[in-house]
Image 1 (tube, rainbow, N blue to C red):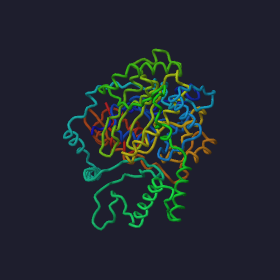
Image 2 (image 1 turned 120 degrees about the horizontal axis):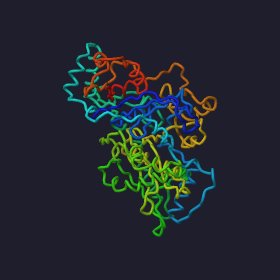
Image 3 (image 1 turned 60 degrees about the horizontal axis):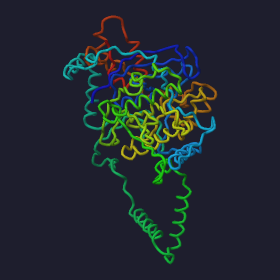
Image 4 (image 1 turned 120 degrees about the vertical axis):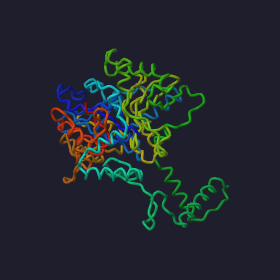
Length: 522
């Protein structure tokens, strides 16, 4: 798999904020990602980064005017609120009966879902002027010879040991999350190797079940079938009758899931038909190419109506750079979703035309929402909320094939901006601690945010960032088309030292990503 190649641009200080309208309050770090693996981007967003096209940025939380906290929803445990059900029912009525009910202003949360990658951020980024040839590493043999120049034998032995582990087993480098009940734990680097004799159960296989429990389950299934199929004269044992009645009551009392609202069969004479298509973002993909013009026109219509852009600010070039260019390399894994990992457009086709497009990234542990644009003529359908609910349902669907994929990332939660608080209504959800990068339930964060717009959510005062940079010399660098550790590059470099810039980059991306990604140096 090709390594990610990034060009660090440093900090951008004192530019306009789209949330509080401060002219010089925003502070963020950014880098141009020429290519990136889905695992690298997963690990970056779990450290507070986010992409806009190929530009990847991270707010400097303790300095920026409006701190932006990464928020994720626990999709498997998602609880539909009353307002969410209203939106789902409204769409169902529109499709099945053609009912167009105008919503009173302020009744629904802000429609323009995931606005935090606003074009104002995109405009401030620095374009990359590096040629493609400079970004292509030379042969692996040449790289290995350069890496061997490093005389630090201890460091070299550690790298060799690490390579042996990687070749002998499957490693998953995951975020330093607090484990979520019922969800996968990604608290450390997990090594899956074949179990050794006498070392306990094989954890890759389902746990053994008692024969007694299996018999009980079979009996219950048989009784349930009999209850549905037998005539009135059928007799059940008293104990079984009580158990079955309790079981049916608990099922009847269960709240409806999102799927119960979305995947409803419409009558044959329904006036409208809605189809959601998942299209890989690639100009080599026929579906993407054939719908490009319609999608780009819809983007321009949305930007001009909702964000008051001029036509020159939302043309095809801007659309391509903002929502079609992606650094993510498409990837298919045996235990991954059928559609694979990478960047996609989720197109909402109503009666043969596109009325909304959700731009999403499918990553190893989550579906990450990038942007949504829609036809303002259909604002009455609350498409921002509806698309978010569809994306949560989609995450749950992908989880069936890819068990590790169980979160829905909504970008940034900005408590200091009231119009951006609606993301906190998707429960249960967690916010990322800006200092230790562990996840904290939003209920615990909100009281803290009421007192201060910048907060450390992790209440363990001794806790530190476990993924912090520990060895700067191990940062991987691409210099003159050759991959090398920073310790070698530092010796070769001529001119003033760039150690401060490399240190800043490594502290923001963390040790794991700094050793996997290639930092371009001219």
